[in-house]
Length: 229
Image (cartoon, rainbow, N blue to C red):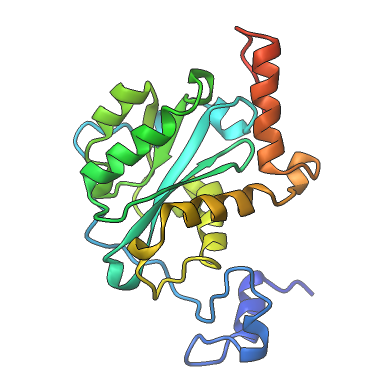
C-alpha cells in the first residue's frame, strides 16, 4: 500500500489546528510548529520591464555552470523588517543582506549591488527573484552588476527551491516573531558562515564554502575558462 506525503503530514499534525505535537517540534530543522499555506502579500505584483523565468537560460536548471543565484527576503514580526537572502544555485553558498532601516526597493537594490559587486564577474551571471516590489529597481541592479535578472511566476516558490530551503534553515536563527532590523551585520555574517560550513551530500560532502573557494582557485589557475560548479 502506498502512503502519500500528505497522509503522513496529516498523521503528524493535530487535527483541526494544524499544530504539531510538542515533542516533535524540536526535531524539525525549521522549528515550525504550524503548517500553513503560503499567502500572497501586497509586496507581490507585476514589475515594469521584468523578464519571466521562462526566458532564463536552461543551463541555470542544471546547477552546473557557476554564477547563477536566487534571492528573496525573509521578514520579521508583522512584516515590518527583513533580511535579504542570496543563494548560489550550484553550491548553496549563502550571502545575507543587512537591511536595518527599510526593506523597500532602494535599500534592497543598494544592498544587492554591494554584495554582488564583491564577486568576480564570472560568478555574476543571473539572479532569480519573485515579483516582490522590493525589486522594483531591478533594471538599476542589472546595470550595476551586469546580472541578468529573472522573475518567478506568482505563487511559485518552487521556482526558487534552493533559496526557499535556505530561508527555512535561516528561521533557526531569525524567528518570524522578532524584529530582524535589530540584528547586527556581524551576526548576519556569522549566520551565513554557519550555513556555508555545513557539508552537503550533493557537493560530495564538501561545504558550500569549500566549493566556493574551489571555484575561485580554479579560476585563478585557469583564467578565461568558463567554470562549472
